[in-house]
Image (cartoon, rainbow, N blue to C red):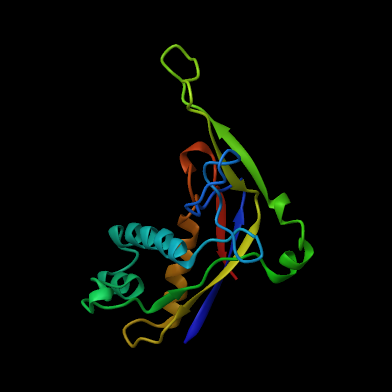
Length: 186
C-alpha cells in the first residue's frame, strides 16, 4: 500500500460540525480531536474529493473505471459492490504545530453569531444563533492507496492532484465565506 500526502491550508475561518452544542455558549461546536485541536474526518475529505472526481468524470478527465476504483461502488456494508482502493485518514494539524500550541488550543476557535432578518430589515425574535469556528490553520492527511492492476499509483496521484485543485471550500456555511482553502499534494 502506498500513500499520497496532502496539506490543507485554510484561508478563512471554517466549521466542521461535531453535532454537539455548548448550551447558551454556542449552538454548534467544531469537531475536535482528543487534544482539543480542530480536524477534518477522513470521511469528509473523501466526500469532497468524490465530488471533485465526479466533476472530472463528467468532463472526461477521469474514466468511469477510474472513478469507480477511487470512490468505490454499491453498498459495501451489505457486501454489494466494489470497495474503494483508497482509505482517507483524518486531516490533522502537523505535530510541530500541535506541540507549539499545547494548552492554548482555545485560541484556535472563535464564536460567530447570526440572526434571521425579516422583510423590514429587523431581527426576528429568538433567532440569534452562535457557532464555533476554527481559525485559519493548516492540516495534513494521507490517502492510503491499495495496488490495483487497472490503475497505476502514478495515475492515481495525477488524478488526486487535479481533484485537490478543484476543492476550494470546506465545511459548513461555505456560501457565507467560511471554509476557503487550498489543498495541495505534499
